Image (cartoon, rainbow, N blue to C red):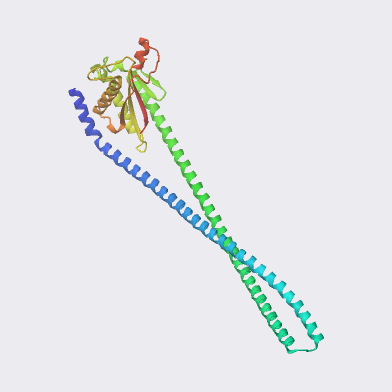
Amino acid sequence: MAIARNRRGRYTSNYWPGFVDMLSTLLLVVIFLMALFMLANFIITQAASGKDTMLSRLNRQLSQLTELLALERSKKESVEDSLSALQATLLDKDKETQRLSGLLGAAGGKTEGAEDRARVLGTQLDEQKKITTDALAKVEILNQQLAALRLQLAALQEALDASEAKDKESQVKIADLGQRLNVALAKKVQELARYRSDFFGKLREALGSRPDFQVVGDRFVFPSDVLFDSGSAEIRSEATNQLGKLAGALKDLEGQIPPDIAWVMRVDGHTDIKPIITAEFPSNWELSSARAISVVRYLMEQGVKPERLVAAGFGEFQPIDAAESDEALRKNRRIELKLTER
């Protein structure tokens, strides 16, 4: 243990400046990415909000203009009906005037009463003509108003088309941004997979070609019996050599992976299906979690940075072999190492 403390002192003295530089670089990258994301989100939100506000205002104006157009059409129809009635009345008056003129001509100025009646009828005829002229003027005004409304509707349609074009452009930009983010994420995952493969290779080389140390998918698996006694979460003294090699491989990995890749080494503890009920461990959940934490603490003592380590306990609920033989139980009592994204 004195040797381990001496090692810890040396590692702290040697790696502290690098640790500070790495944290500073990582913090700057995270702040930059957050600022970029917030800026893009703000621009998109403002564009969408402005588009919705403008479209709503245009819809309200279009509705008002439609109602006004319907009202003006109704007025025009009423005026046209009145004009038709006036024209019919004027025609009747013309006929009546002709008839009266004929009577006057035939009578030859018999009485003054007939002349007065003729004057009254002439006055009425002039009034009817004046009414007809006013109606025609109103119809012309209505036609001009309809033309102005058509121009306004055309302008509104152009504004709507422009708004739709801007909306399509925004959607294209959003899709392009998402595609770029997916490509960048895929590259980071590929880089992490390459470093994981190199790490597992170095780890196997450091621990030797033991058959019970296996690489299963993206995990490095070895039995818990190598590190712990039955029902215990205290690392055996003869197992510190293997864990020391694991710590050395992890520290080498820290210097190889670029700082812009957020990664952690997850240590997973697993047990067999045999129940355990003790004062220290009421169930296999506690036992598996305590073993994973013991491994993480030892790696930290050897100089591995704590922010690169995660401990997890799975109890007996993630078996490799579902059988209940001694060999299956031995396989299920294991520690797994997984290099993954944070």
